Length: 190
Image (cartoon, rainbow, N blue to C red; front, side, top):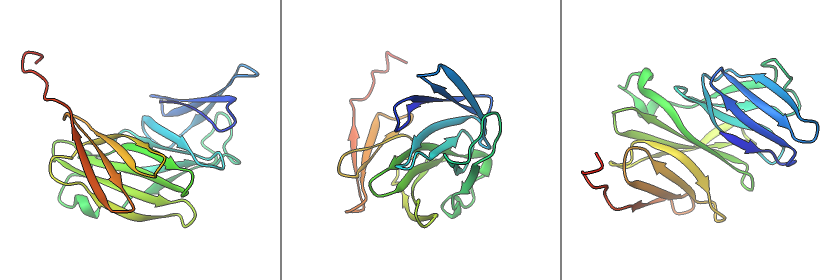
């Protein structure tokens, strides 16, 4: 993942070596941060410049406090565990984070978890101000692999469902999911 922070001067990118890098465009300097997430993937910034990210095979949100992180260390990073009650009976080895996006207006982080080959997925709404998960959304049958996420201007969460021809919109005001399905790929492709 690559993101430009709120100042517009820094380009951040993830690295499979359990690090996140920051490139300062004006000085051409690189800074490397050791992170507690294995294989950091999606990331986003809150309105204070703090970094939120997920890692492949993790069941947590990770926070990099902008005022405390230091080059070449893991200083200023912390893990925020997500409740896993909705995945009861499923091996934790199969549960992983899928997507993440920060709602800067509402001061929330949206993250998804999925259980590989179990057709089970959930969305979590984490409130930055209270430091807790305030909503858990169980995804209906057929939406078990929520991976990519984005917010629209109305606060709706748009999610791609990996391995299907489906994406969906979650409206947090109405607590409603609307599915959108592309045409099914021809078997000739496979």
